[in-house]
Length: 183
Image (cartoon, rainbow, N blue to C red; front, top):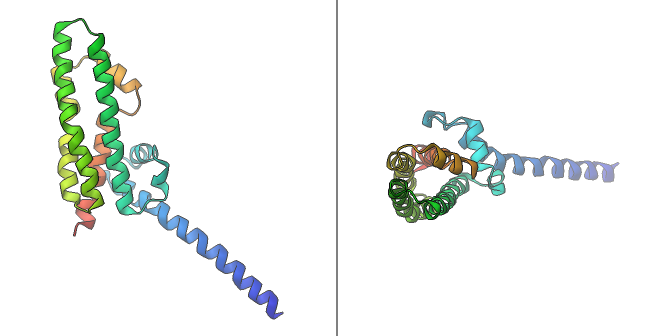
């Protein structure tokens, strides 16, 4: 009887310990995504962006922030590459001028976004929030420079989640961390 009681307690311990650890980790991305509504981001949009990195499901709060910032930086880099391809293929001088402005604004924000990753790693969330807020303005600057070129938007949107959406999530995550976990 004692051996079966010890076995039962051991099994109970294994089953009760392991799921608690996993659900506690998963709860961090859920905690963030369920609390960014004040930034006009739905939990579904937040999860769709953060879910592009499989590590988001097991990240701690700071890790969720790092993942969000990394996704924004990578998306900006991919968007810049797409714009450069369109620029290289364009023969319209007006379109080229607008695209050159887009290249410039994306080129300028990428190092700042990489700095935002470092800021979040250092738990300097307000610094990261400032950069994410600046990044959020980049698509509008590009749209204005290209006179809201619908072909450009179509190509960029086809390449994945639009930068404006990714930047919005990055700003919301940095804002949530800044508001709730700044030192």
